[in-house]
Length: 191
Image (cartoon, rainbow, N blue to C red):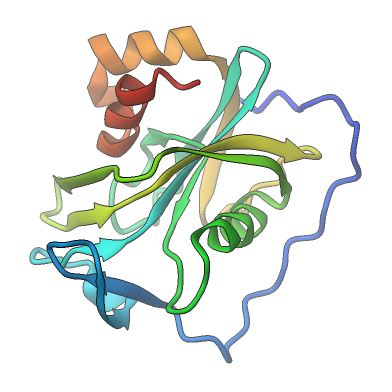
């Protein structure tokens, strides 16, 4: 599949470069959901991943949502179709700012409207390799400004798909999607 771009209402945005000055850390959480520390993002994702803060973003345009296929070099769920973008707020970074940062980094596009739909979404999933995702992961829905221009080290493919078809796949063929996106689509219907 190849992506179907949005109407060009806005200019595309340049992908920001990653700064070596900012540590790539995640916010560790206690069982009550409160921050208890920070850890290196790569080192925290193991077979015993501690609970940490993340987010998911679903871009929508009319009745379609943007699915992305995770690059095969990803540590967890490589090559699997998923929601538009996921990531982790850094210590001291507002979740909404993290969504905008990661979407720009992964998709080379800016987030327009942004709405929180599942503030307390929490899940734990184990990849075939044994790596665990263990996250409190607020879920956002919003729009993109400009056409996606994905970073190929993050996203190997993308497609605008009818939300009803994605919800049907999540319900009847969940192995086609990342486990968190299955739970998110069935939890809020992709609206």
